[in-house]
Image (cartoon, rainbow over all chains, first blue to last red; front, side):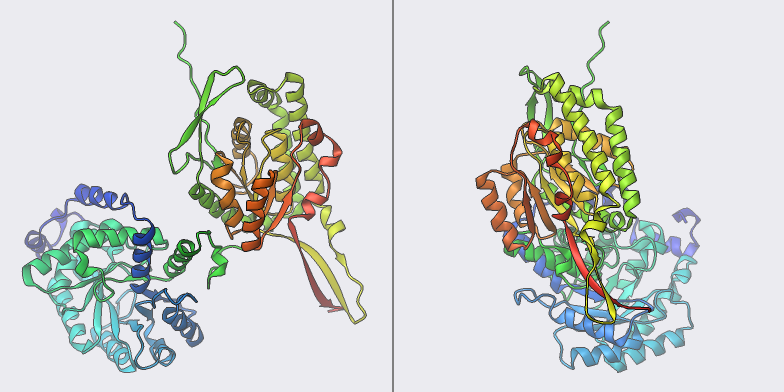
Length: 313
Length: 288
């Protein structure tokens, strides 16, 4: 959908938040991959990335046992004690109790649950809010919600805003991450418009998040950059600092370092903390730990020396 | 009007693609007359790392093929080398081999592929077996491929030496990363072009060119390489032995020898295959 054919409410919102220069963004992010990060800086970056990982499992075949082992892995990603714990585990609401048992009551690893009929969001608002309430009551520290993409694209912006506000209110003390599902928003203009919409409803300590990982297009440097710039503009305008979480498709340590370069050069060092930046990923943690091990020993380790690397022998 | 010369950029074959070194480094290669021939990439340890990743990705698919199919593919490789006999011989003579010796080397390389193609569905009968036990069950030993194997090809002969080390490793379902002859890398580049159009899946054989001094230490320590088949001098052997001990990998050395020693039947057979299979012993109840 091009801006000219968009519903009038969406068109007015585009005018309010400003357009995105597509070529400019893509040229800008291409530069992020050219930074040379070696030795001590690389080790520091890798450890920072480990501490920002939301270790995720969102599969129909998840079980309490699998979630418990995920929690152990998040608490202690590697036998080398110099490797920090992950930021959080991210799971389905039905497994929150099992995860809380596995992590213990005062865990350094936070417990995030997707809610609001993840990944489609296509149920009644009351059902979605009940799901959030239940996840928080079961012990979730953070809630990952999806926005109503259908309503957004149809120009029902007030409805999207009200739904986000309702979830914020329902979350209580839990932090909220608003998933825009950039793969379904189609253009950078839409991503910026949706980001600005969500940012207006959020509290300090909340996040906006790129995607569910369930569609073809996930986090890329470019769509993350559009969201980072929306966060920057919101911060400069209101003084409210919102966090960012790219999710899906970030598999290698090298990619993670590129994303960190983007944060540092767009939002500055204040965002280089797990309190304001997360990676939603399942395979990334293994590669980060593997690269840290390579830096420590000087030899390339085999992937099967780390947990859950089943792709080869 | 004379045509402008069209020269080839030699590029190593890794993961089914023709790469330049990630470092961008090359070195000028002169032919036997001393004339400039081409710039050959100097691969680095990162190129080796990428090649190992490619080989690891190709491993399960290659190992799952039937022995018969692996034999067919190796035989077809031999067929294609036979068809390009003149081209490979010319590549050898250009860098100093006499014409008769070059033809002998290419023919022997073709025969070596055919030799190991024949072994594909036969080595298991010699290496595996049903072990005698005093109990109501069978006890089998079967050979399994080890995974990714590193090959350090000799300086001479550049084609036959490389293929004599690579063929027995891949016949059992291993995949390889091979460092081509340092002084004469061009036949290995040409072999990469042959592999690209053969039935061999991408990533089963990955060819690197470069300096041994740059790459031998990484071949030694890379833990994802499960074995090394090498022609190496005493100093290199020390580096390889130490690194292999650290990363627990098997090492097989072949003596550095002139062409004549690589031509004969003594340079082939079951032993080079046996060196890179892992015997797996298992039991099974009788009658179930």
